[in-house]
Image 1 (cartoon, rainbow, N blue to C red):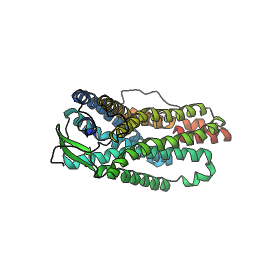
Image 2 (tube, rainbow, N blue to C red):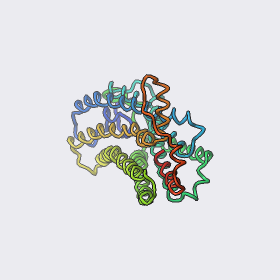
Image 3 (tube, rainbow, N blue to C red):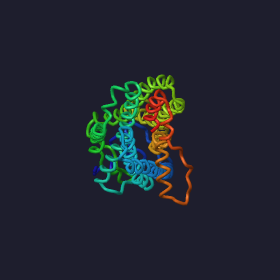
Image 4 (cartoon, rainbow, N blue to C red):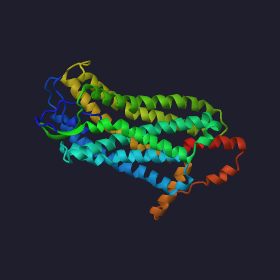
Length: 358
């Protein structure tokens, strides 16, 4: 913790000192009281919404997959880990909602590092599991016979462990250099690297691993998958194509504005953009809005990856019917009976599309 009351470090993209404590040595003095007042009202409400929706949606996914764990395949395992990642991410939201509301960190040094570590690990593991699911779909559709014998439970467990370890390693520096410090507004929980290289690391991993890498993988893989699906003899091919396009478009729309905003902030701090108060305030406001918009993506993942699938939807409705017996959910068709009536060619195409549709 700094004892001079001055913060001279950059705030990480996910540490909320961004709204309370900044290095203003590169800027002329700016009045930020209106921005702080806006953030103290806007952010807690939106963070709370992300927590509630993310917890309910991803929690239901986890419950359904745990109940049907005896029928687990590699796709189910990736979906389970994706939901756990989003749950871990969502569970940090109440702490940051309180942080935003009172404009100071009140949970101590350990919780500052721990919550930051959970937040970043959940974020990166969610991104990495989306990449794994994309690559798995690509291999199943483009190289069906070659990969069938490798899509085993053991392979899924090994891959999951590797992704979680990788996510932890990527997040570790962001957790180590996060600390409680003091400024004019009180205690803040900030990313405070001790040298310039680690400041670049924060921007690099957020933009490269958090946006560019998954976007390149999705566009590259799905651009090959879509033509193959169009030529398949299955009634669900148009629905699958729409799902694929929505996955890429939604991911870009939700995360690109936030990543662009934090990159512009970094460029201004490095002196490559105008050193003007108005531009500085506009970037901070943009980050405040686009950040929360991006975080809501964890609430959409269950809808995009799970609830659009007939098999998963059937399981979810059955579970909800037991939990809430007074509410009658519409019955879903028995997919097993339909599958026996299909020809061998259609069944093969349907098996491939079911990997995407769950």
